[in-house]
Length: 598
DNA sequence: AATGTTGGCGCG
DNA sequence: AAAGCGCGCCAACATT
Image (cartoon, rainbow, N blue to C red):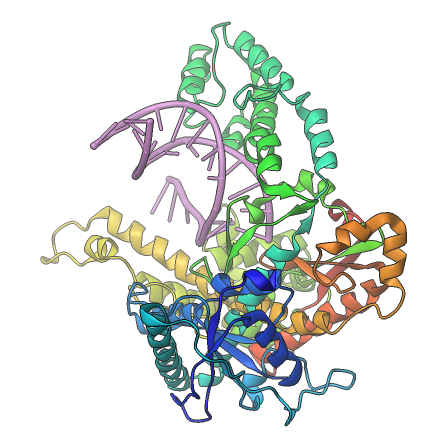
């Protein structure tokens, strides 16, 4: 596809902030980028967005090791400084990039191949290509616009570097910027690789649960099983037709049968003893599967044996990723059966065990807690403090992190506070700050949003001390307290996971099946598939869901991949939290099918 | 007809 | 007394 790639403008950054070499027009940007990647190990691409540019490079067969994503960085800086994210800098059209070829130093070394034996030499080579020298063939306003944009990019980048260095903890904030940028690369690579998805297995699952697919075009027809259930539900409720998808209709029909409900949520229905309830619960579960992940979803999102979701890096205020289209982060567990490795390949499924409480232990520097979090089952280790009851330890921790205190949670929270005062104090301080309208920051310096004007208006003290306080004020304050309480933990956990991803990428990129694999897979009839596939003998990161990664790789590499995830987890712990006794174990399975993991 | 809101539920 | 944190997506319903 390189032939169809638009021309791009490129220049090399100088060693001084804001300095840049002459802009050069290149008519094959992917080839040029690839040449830099090969000959100038450590090159870092500065560009407007990976989301805009990198997919086209990947389609052209080009991977990059590191970048500085100006748009993602802008979001982090705007959040930190309380400036509007809308005041985004004017950035050039997509195909303008800067090559930062200065030798990586310390922090900037993230995230390329680590300095370990066995990795490719990353010393810059004197024979690096430099900017290719082409006569400008684009002329007139188009070229001028790109040229101006490129100059803006140089300026904006220098400004961002200055603001990163000015952070009260520039090391950590710089790490956050590097990790967020690496995340942008990983996200594009995962979309490109796609999750291996067996449409035939998915279809069989649906058919087994719902009945045969309603015949063509009938998008809105209910499959057989849903029609049956709707009929039985109506029969139980007096015989008049009722659409169970309509909360209003259902509430009325239930009331007519003498069942009063505040809502039609499954959790509420489950508490009711009536023969219609099991039918309703089954209907709801199946209707949800049909609507959200049924045949229409399959048609829309799966092609060529892959599900290719689009990730939105940093799309959640806590820094977690969101996804756009296809609901990639809400795939129902039953459908994991359809995620099957290619022949000769396996899935390495690795998730961080009990990540959030471990993060809290490391954040708070609570030695007693940290020792319990050193390894193994964290809740079991804490159980002693709760009369030996692991479940109680878990409730206490979740309550501390989410701000719940219903039921016996309040009492358990008191135990937690007594035994692990620093851990409890950490989240409680965050909650107080939030209730007072302040902002809080994660371990690497992601800042939570300031309260809205509406919130400030509601919670403002009344002008006369005797006036009754708006009961909504206390409620709003506590809600924000729960948000900031959770933010410090969830956002810091998201950072650990992001750094894990950033540390895992280069390790995977360095792995290939040296001999025989291409021939072997061709002999299995995969040659046609391989023709359009990226890096056919290399592990592919294909899924990332908050604290879990899936790597799709040739079976012989599974052991190496599993070790790499463990190493990356340990490295992420060191980079994010420094010297802490807390460990971040990964629970890893090597499986042919996602449903068989752990 | 198009757009916005609500109730509900999937995931972590 | 009551209250969990964060998302995206669907059908139904409300509004323009």
